[in-house]
Image 1 (tube, rainbow, N blue to C red):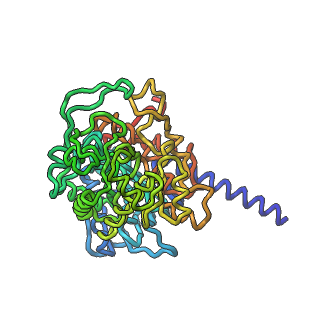
Image 2 (tube, rainbow, N blue to C red):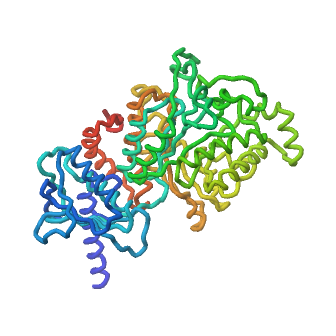
Image 3 (cartoon, helix red, strand yellow):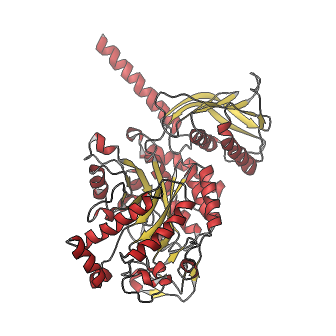
Length: 534
């Protein structure tokens, strides 16, 4: 009898879970909440709806929500200072208490006459409002009906990132803000801004004006497939002033997104060396790169170079309040170092056995420079070569091995392996897609990724901060192409870094995404329709 009762209870629970998943997949919620219980009925948002905040720390989030409703639906709920009358229709934002508070955690309860949002910090309120926005009908003018439900939600990882390369192709401040807004709408919270490379230096450094006067401009660009080696002769460039950067940082902060700037070194430095060739080992004049790929000109590990980079990083650190500065460290060709008597002398003086150890020497100096500014470095997994700098975090892109090695050495890690997280890869049949750098990373493949490797122990796994999608722009000539390559793969990644591992279900996600397309269309996002077989 007991066994029969257990089986019956299991069947009832299975039916309930299945029913809940069926209801949830009919909602365009991405990422799917950790828990979501549906109820009957709707709540209607209109100009008569009242908004009440019990704690002033949440006011900025409510202003954001009000502006969203006004600009998208021409609806302006009333913001009241006193608690609404019980029988009125209202939205209330409360300070919530949770057993184990996690950054971004929230509760969202919707019934027929009120919406209650609870969070212990502003980011939780913001994420609750993003879920509420996704529940809004795409079309509506006088009133908006949202379904009654109860959500308990929190993220799995603390680093939920997207990257954008503005060196190969330059994008306006308006688009950078739009990109950050896209991220934030899926509860992603780290924007990795790739600002310098061989093909252009994009950040104003007042102490070294030639970085933008010379380094921000190239004489032409590679056109067509890399194998063709064809170039145009159209001058190309641009850069962000420090005032523009401050404005973008403030905007991102409002959306609970931290910006991690990337200043590439010691390789991918041709644009900087075109402006200041004295910081290379040869000192020979050079030009900003026109072709994609890796250049041999790199920073020389000399004292005057470190002084230059110290000055640059001081200005960078003052502009970006986040913990990390990304220092690159990838694809460092050692040709110039191997030819340099100065580098050979450093190696001899320090007993270095190979040039990877010289690279580690360089990175460790930079780590110290950044640390005394109150920041930490993060770099691509090549910074492991020759020995990892103290306190450095690692971004694992050449597969997952670098991330595993760093975690086992008790260093924090962001997983971003090319096979799953590089959104410059083709996402459908290359014959039907715009020219891309190569690779083949479908929406389903992105969704299948698991950021925490099975080979790590429980303690080692704590060093996996999360994952990130990378958008390298060699073949993305305008913002429409960036949106096309990023979306909807960004949405898939957003779900896998938010939901518990056991909650992932591609078919469920795909059905919700298919409904979600209406919102993308409304926002004018140029997403890849090939993900939907069109």
